[in-house]
Length: 524
Image (tube, rainbow, N blue to C red; front, top):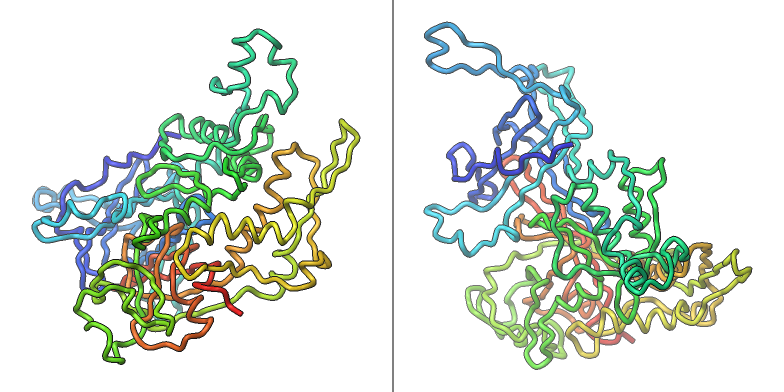
């Protein structure tokens, strides 16, 4: 499959017909239907609902679009020029679906400014949404009572994900020329590579993932500079019955970070069309500046949301610059950021849903996880407890994530009790795979669950294109609030696990789900 022509149909200037208003703000908003035989710009006026989902549990964004399609206008639109009217050569012009089995939806959205004087201040990799989706399924809804009501629904999958889902490739880590084991063995002439064990001829899992993506996309793919190579090696050949997505998921199931404390890594296709593979602990490292003397946001903190009213008379007005250390959100007068902000530059939260970790998850998932391994070749059976007991897991979680956050000795929120500490509640896991597999299914898996199943928040507010998953937002209370443990958890930096961009009529919303695995200080 040839790669979709990303730029061929992309308007290079702000055309009048592409300008749309959402929430009384101007956007360049272009949506194209595209296949090898037809191309059609969908007017914004007929789009009832466009939803784009960004989730850290998915490598790629996904989406759904609902358009008004009365009388099947999309398939039966009629266009003619003045010349065609004059000479009588006007013909029907329509978009032909499924003529090649590859119908694409190209979406391009960015803020628009009159005169463009602010354009240089909005980096496209942050503020632009440029996605190429494949329409993998469609639905239609019609009304029996109203003959003018008919909608067409497109279910959207990123075209790169669709390629992984479709392609069956012949691929093996043995084909990678950069395999260090092979290079060293051949150079030294010590052992023929074909005589090595699978473990000895393996390559780093991160290198294997990168090479697999290069083969699938015919090397038309880019990667971030901070790509994680992985802690272990793998020797793998794609089974005949596997699609490329199966191969990728297998490698990801083995991959843990090349760090002192082994960690889950998040594989994502970023806005700049580069793949990134980054440990979760590195995300937390970039939440703040790392300067304990002057606490300022890091480059992974992308927004601040405020709550409460200026009612105590001690806070600056809504249009004033303020230092957040002056905000008395808690009686302890705790620091958040030692930096000046203008409060009316940030969107206020009016309401939210807040949940703590459930008892079921706490007692069945966030517990000691002994790793049982059976090596048939060596006829040995091992149970690994030292690095996978709940006490060690909580300690590693604290060091990897929480110690990087600001606060009065911030503490992780993994629940503990005597049943867990005495290992009376455990979750046994078993593997016959190579040692690399044993790393992932134990402590790193529990740490990831502690993040995903732990304290969570969900809220909806006015949309911003710059918001995305795998980044942090800060929540602050500008008014008075009781000095309670709830405030120590609620206020602070939240890790976005899922965000939905919704364009409904002339409104644009973000629905944000985020996790916060720590409290500002220890909660008694």
